[in-house]
Length: 565
Image 1: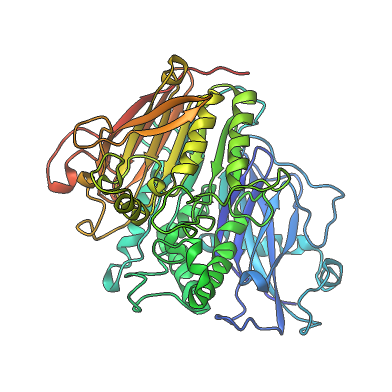
Image 2: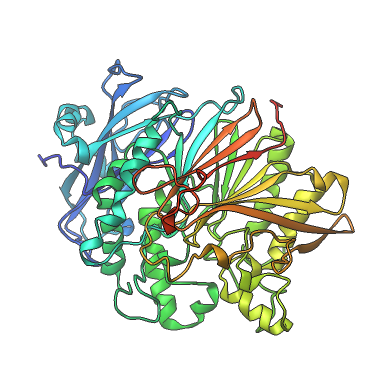
């Protein structure tokens, strides 16, 4: 009989609900690289060992597959799946708002059909003993490599309650002796997530892009540029295998979405036309799906964007990278599309169509409850070079906006989204972003009607977890602070209900220090509080990067009040 081994990577707690949780691991057969060995199959073994501080009444152990086409990674959804060798007739749902401890291990089996790409569950299950025999072996594995802890979400039909979560992005891997520095911030992040200094424990972690840097220097510099399967694999192993990140990811539901550095700097679909870029893209997305996408919610087939709820609070994570197009008319912004080209048929909705439908559905069912849109690219503020009021020709502005690699290059997408918000009076929309290596918060303001002026919307940017080159980018002075101020003019004009409207914004709490942001929502006061924490777990202060002490970077944002619907 094979020996039970700990996972090579993981476990990672992925998508959770009130009655389920997805757990991810990577097994190992000693065959790193693109030539996955056909002589063995890798099986995951998982069991709940504690439920709400107590031993479960029955030892339930499950098998699940770690597929070679996903680089020997795999997930098991506790509460929804029965595994390969099912004993129960139906999955046993987890309990809402309940703490669980699980153990995960891996088995290697000689492959009875090494030439077959797939082997049925039934055929594979015949080679396995009863899963319960592994319970004691699971508990004997090292906790750091096999144990995951999580709390299920509150029931979606329950009462409106407070919510706390953490958002962050951009973990540069570090060079030479500084690789450990890139991992350091995840230790205080975990402490904050567990609750300290009287603050609530957080429910989830949003990692909104650039979890790896496939191009460690620049896409034009061959050194440190991932362009083989082994190199993309190594990026993920280094990131997810680092000490503090691995400990964090096994104790908090983590939701990830990609941005450009999972592929290459400022990537968009136009580059697929080049054979070499297409090859790199295929390698990058294959690795991304294996290490990030597969433990997320999914829900839209093979598309990378997704939605989920934490209790009564809805989230939509956009794929603003692999579906961006800037290829039809050179130096023209009107035909650029950030969320896929417009749909040509109602039964084939674009990502933008699905996002707008989700917003309308949330407003109808949940009223003014805050709605969170994860946009790896920053919705606001805009770079000073890409602002609408900067002098210059339309061609010059188009080139500057496209170089900004953000929303200014996609006015048609932005106008459609804002039009929908205004026409449907979608209240309390909050964008969550990363990317720019400069955290801040921005309040969006609407002019054009009394109803529009009462809409509350915000943009929260948290970046970077680790970026050692603040002199290279992210300077706060490079971004608009007040879109109505002289010299910063950046109002965005759009139409809704046949009338002209303008979106303005005010941004503040800028910092270039390594950081993550904690977001707290309180329905009783209708406030959203954003606090920026540094690499030592301290609350950051304005001017801190320049050796000055200032006000704590804690913003209290006034939402429109909401109640249960």
